[in-house]
Length: 404
Image 1 (cartoon, rainbow, N blue to C red):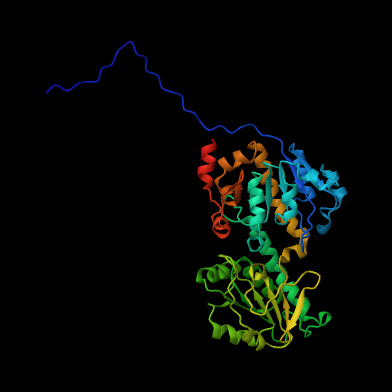
Image 2 (image 1 turned 60 degrees about the vertical axis):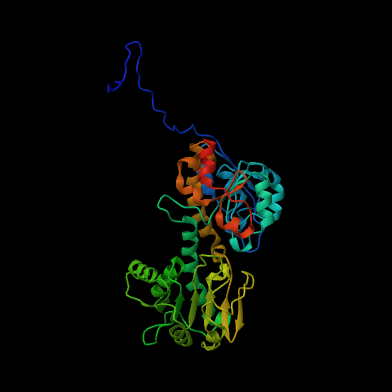
């Protein structure tokens, strides 16, 4: 049987088609608004005058509410000299394309939000409300959260910086409450020659725990670290470069160590919502009178059973003669350093967003930014939030691809 050979006619002209590449659009000028934060315990501001200066030099407009930087000791004049426009009406801020906040979106913010705005702020899963999410969805808002935003190396730069600040601050706070000035038992953290060093217990070997351990060792204290992850304990030892006393979270060992310690630090992270309670009321009651507990994980419920939320105004309470410091958002007490850390992450991100021609394009070109988005044009793209509040979830990758 004859095989049909392909027929090629000389009357056809065969040409290769040109390949179409995804060309980045020309940059656009952004209008960035920074409102003054009215929420409890929030002193930080998301962009420093230095960061604003760089944005303005790159052709972007920055509008800031009067006294927004007061908590971080930045004046309106600092911002004005950096090129920002100072306004006294909050509604003017919410007319900007991009709103940058250092506190989560509140009910009052939702009322002022304009349709199709982009908002960059923390999300604080523990206090998030369904009504706020629904209003933002209604207004087709695109929202990026500090907590989930990743950099090119896959780390969460803002969370990391805040954890470093909290970890380093913890020992300064503990030292303050061990002194007589604050009715402590009059012990110097670290001690001196001929006197045994202060004993510090750290529960959690994450970034907070690591920085707390580093500061405590630098002060001369004796440090013992507990964590259930052998990997994290190994990483902590390698990063600090000292073979430290470490243990898994075993109640009997933990209870024994707590009985003789001067400072106990709760630095466990609540990966899936609430932090587990690992120190019971009984363990706390057996601690030495005048000891100090600093529960950094109070943001996610706390890991000491006796912990209760306190404020920067009234930071401590005493139970079983043990001083408890349970202020959420410790970095806000060191607002200027925290503001500089946030600004260092957001300023380059905003410049890149402008160069790419807006948030829609940067999300397409930079995959790592997608992890930070929990709302895109009013569609909820965070699975955890959709499960928790029973709202419709949309896959962000499909959403972006369908718009190209």
